[in-house]
Amino acid sequence: MNPPAPHLRADRILATLDKLQERINARFPNAGLSSVCADVIETARFSARDAANLARPHFLWRIAALAVIAIGVAAQVAAFRFLNIRAETLTAPELVQGLEAAVNLLILFGGAIWFILTLEEREKRQRALDSLHRLRQLAHVIDMHQLTKDPTIVLDQHKTSASPERTMTQFELTRYLDYCAEMLALIGKLAALYADRVRDSVVIASVNDIENLTAGLGRKIWQKITIIGALEERR
Image 1 (cartoon, rainbow, N blue to C red):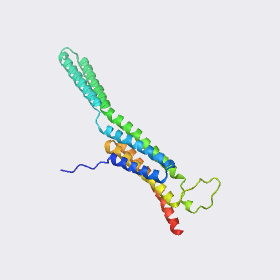
Image 2 (cartoon, helix red, strand yellow):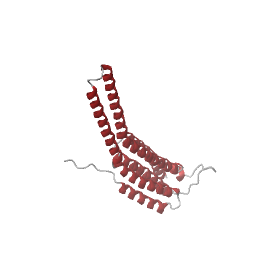
Image 3 (tube, rainbow, N blue to C red):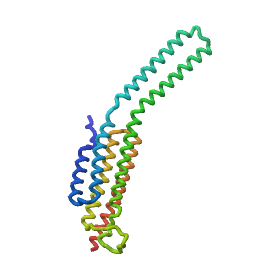
């Protein structure tokens, strides 16, 4: 017997985010990055509950589907019984017309059953996509916070009056960028919660897009950290 597949644990992701916020508050108590991390934690708590709810079956839709199936079967049985009883008195055109009506009724109920059976899946998909869009927005907000953190700050050359105010040391800048990269990675894991709970191809594709986005933004941050290290070695 194969062991159960491992799953992402939302409580571990939340614990990591809480610890990250403590580190940010200790290092940059007045920085806007702390409020961004608080928003990420709030979104993470919602995502953990939302992904868990999406993994549960919605019995209301399933009962409705069973009811439509039962009504459809009963209608078909009644129609064929009626045709069987009237077969001897019906003319050939009338019999063909009755069979055509029965087939149309079967197609109609089949479409209704398909619609109700897929309604639960489509509702879950839309809820997951809305939540994933919120995670995508947070990733871009984090990217905006690190956008002006230029690694050439350690050189402090060619500064103009329009240049952003830079008060961080090299070590502080490295830690700030590192915190941004960690938050982006954790957003990718929050997105993966939905792929783990909702086995829908559209949701999984959206999760992959977010993971590619956060990985790309994280690589851009680590390039800055690498440049800072190289500049320090040259100094």
